[in-house]
Length: 207
Image 1 (tube, rainbow, N blue to C red):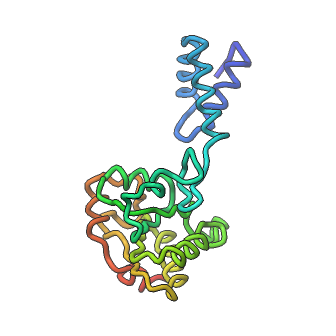
Image 2 (tube, helix red, strand yellow):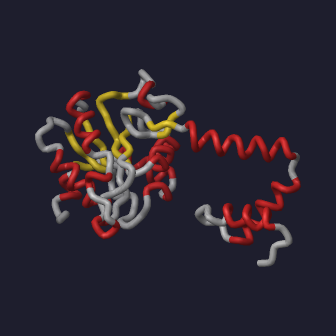
């Protein structure tokens, strides 16, 4: 792709670094911005810059937040007796969109994957243990994608929490094995949340 301007080329290269954005799509986005009013482009860049520099992570659940405590954890109407463990922030958004869950969350920030160099110490697992010891929650829901890494993570967390009197369940396998939670349709995800299973049904065969 030939560029008549190094400024355009630099902008296209930056946009194409985003997931799912190729050079042609990046070029369309850059040319679109070039047609906008300078004030609109400045507002766009300011919003992105503020998002990156001012975003916080909830001290309790590690969800993204404008404040030190996210809106979900701060909501007095949420069930403190339930904590839903998810891999990522996107999974929180996916479950919230079903409107079938009213408890709290805990974002792990990934899954155990030795091949990728991701061990338990790289995730928000110890903070989950500490949180459960303080909250004395009644149920921990493992809403993790049904993959090998997901089952390994669930198995590890289940072992770490053996000393606590908390009931550990997992979403039902309406979400196909190997599927990503964030890509499940809302109806399937809602049914999986409502039809929870004892965690032993899943982790008994894990390594």
